[in-house]
Length: 296
Image 1: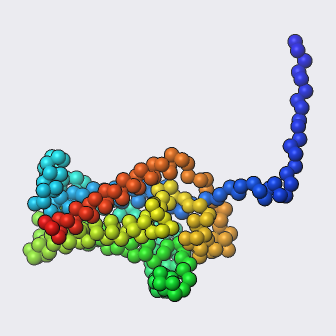
Image 2: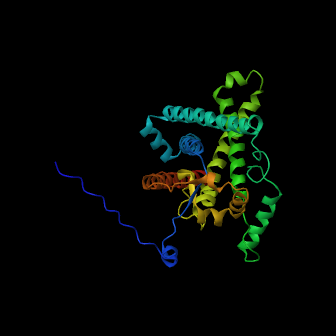
Image 3: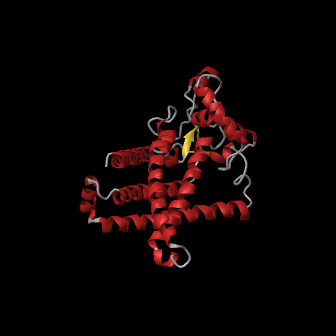
């Protein structure tokens, strides 16, 4: 039986300070959106795209492209079914979001959710940031330093919130017209049809012409801001885009709680495919909506 050989330990040569400095610094990533928030956003934009597509087919049912689309998908009855189904899913997602806000703000005592630097409620700083941003656009002043949510993100949020209430209520009023007719006059149900149609078209124009540009096509995000898909952003992006939040996080000693791993390659590729597909569908629907509205 052979005797065991001795293990030879070889000491690693010590690195000089110059070699340590010369080593590439590993980029840190910070968590911005939780997995639940990203899933909810995925449900939101997926159902909205289907609602926008089916709504445009119903809104401009006399257009050639609408008739052909309905024919491919089984007729206008099938289009209406998909529209109603996605409306239910989107309503459920909206109610989950509202329940989460109420639970965090009222029952869990989470500070800042209704007011403060981490809130989606606009404050005086947002007003100052808006005018400072315009001055920066014109080269008349420095770029404002944004907090966790910039003023345009809060505007996007409340535009969607408003649309959910107005478009949702008017849609359900038409869907369950016999029930609502018990306490609404006839003219109100007629008005619901007009409100639902015009507000839906306005939502499509806003999301595809304003939200897409603000989020993905601005210079520091072009061609796509993938943070809503990956949930994380690099430290460099964090410092440049939201310097106030970054400084506040360091001052409060919370940086360690938000450090996370870099997004894996598969997630980056998946995010690009999903994101570019959504943008392409959205821009196509925008062109169809404008052509049908102004050309016929």
